[in-house]
Image (cartoon, rainbow, N blue to C red; front, side):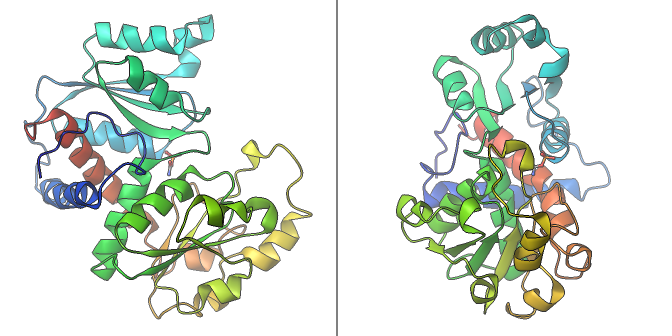
Length: 309
Ligand code: CP
């Protein structure tokens, strides 16, 4: 297909063909990463800025590595140490980065919608690296890539997303991405973290409050961290009760299909949403997800800035 998309904001408006193009391109990029010298000149002369208003380990470092592997120039800006602290507006920051020659701006922000605002006013490509509880499209793409790598397909898979769905941008982008590529998504969590309205908001998605029923025969499970920094109210009677009812334990995982991969976007709180034995066990795909994040982000940078257009 001919790639025409200029920004990556979420997967809701991606076609299945576009997602498959990203996955295929990421496969080729993964081969580059296995070379003795993992570096290609594809994006020489291009400038990528990572602009993070929230902490990050995986997303920021993998965009950095992805851009460097493609020989782009990379500048990293953390809002806490930038002129944002002196009152500079988002749009002035974006204009400043453009004036410095940015071809792509990778932005993470605690407010939902900020990358959309940036894209309206930016000549540079905007990549959403997570906006509030709304979307994290590059994470969903690497999750789908990892699942396909492990299971050979996405079509027809029953994927359980478990935990703090309410605050999860990862869950929302995966609902779109997995749905478009043919998976059945089952959301599971306590009612305060999984409002029943989700079933209406996302047609085709199942909502199941009972973890044992959700896991029965599942092809894959994605556990999510409790994002207590985003809690506005006391949403859980107690952490112990949550752990007792919703932690992904070896006994519960045994209800899923044999060998079902376990995903987690990270950072993990082992002992809370996931038992350490599961997090570190043979079914865990967590480190594959991290490694695949570089290949998927290389693919996206290549498609947005490279010779594909
Ligand atoms: N999955 C994810 O977004 O991780 P970071 O917050 O470390 O980037």
